[in-house]
Image (cartoon, rainbow over all chains, first blue to last red; front, side, top):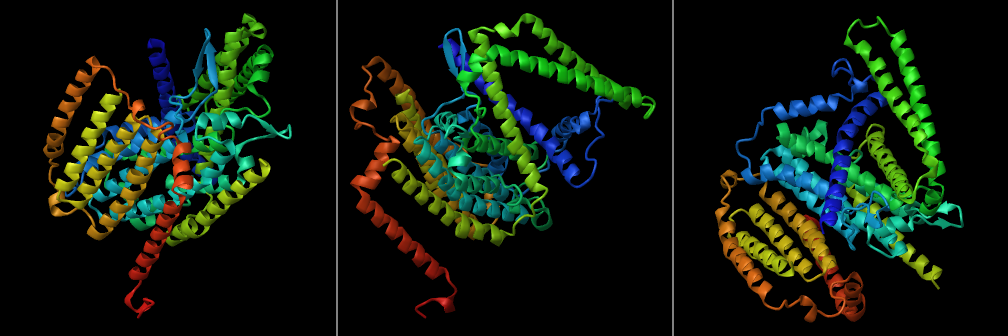
Length: 426
Length: 171
């Protein structure tokens, strides 16, 4: 009983740290990425002892600013719902992660630990149900602020969420039919196989139309451009959170990015194989664990040393450029990279090529979880990329796309999948 | 666990329902109704039917009530004078108090007696996705399709009524 509770607690903490680590990174990526796309420099001023990390210190400054800001509230608000809405949005964004697996299983001391917080049989429906509750946070928050802009934002957001929820569920039905389950762990496990011996059986391969519908519906659900009509600055100020300030605003803001991470994790888990590394199934990884571990340690160590050398060269070249604490940065980063590289190369003396069964299991888990995180990071970046390259839709265009194009296409896709399954299983 | 879920879900359902009827503002009432639906989902969970519990949240709390709220907000507009007062939490709390007392007392009493599981009264496979879809698409498929047609007719009727006066087909 006690180890079970400890396991569950460890997994919850890991997921929590994963999300809360992703949120500031995404905010940084959004600011720096938009700067890159618009040919600007982006944030580069905040520094700790001269260490700027290309603007990565800015999220810390943002958080400090939001924590210490005055909490300005409208006088004629609905007192309870105004305070409750940001909490609800954040709770919904965080609790969705419970059913997304971040790895296969970890075998330690004869115990098999599945790497998912809660392996519900109806996992996918749980995500849809929780996501549908998120509408309340936005709608009630906008309404309770008692302002026309927030109210319009809330109405727009409710309308778009209702319209795209149906498409989202429809786009996933085909996937459920092909994998024959609602359980996310089984859908991910089923994507480890190969079709015709070379093509990974990923969701995007078996359900390409479903993937397109799902990604569009997810963008609409998270209220990101091109579906950002709920918070369009030029029309309704900041939409539903116009009247929020300080930490209540921070909750809305963080929830938006947490929603992006969950959406990216869902896309990765359902359509891109989740933690599965293509063409490298678990059996192969375990059989050659020693060799692969040695190779990756040596490669990582060598790469870190090369990076360290580049930083040290830059530090020498930039000496005397600024004449202030900023000159410390390349040297500091170079020292960190050199330490990491030496540590990785030094671990080679522990003979990683003759690693045991437990070590092999840990290696496989680290590799697969790393693969999952890399996929999530890519799709989170895709959100930012789309936001700064695609122009957004008008309200009526969003409605027409949802009801007149995506809904019928989703139904057709469902029917086609059913017919194909009947023919294939004959 | 089942007993606790049963009484807790029942308490949430009852207090939410009472508060929904008693509240003067329509938006408040809708929110309390959502709360009550979550209690109903708890009851399904107590019956070992997670599928039904999740569907209860997805369909009633997540879709139907969002539509209700949408319409209420659209007709009523922003917060009204009386609604910005301090919340009167005592009413639902008062309604919940006896239910919580009953839940505590009953779960203590039932722990000593022989446990009466729900398994004895539930049919095999109750609330499983396969069983539910079997009922909907096999046993009661005619009624199911009739309801779908009824809803379609209602929707067409609402659209016809919603059009402007001059465009109505019968005028």
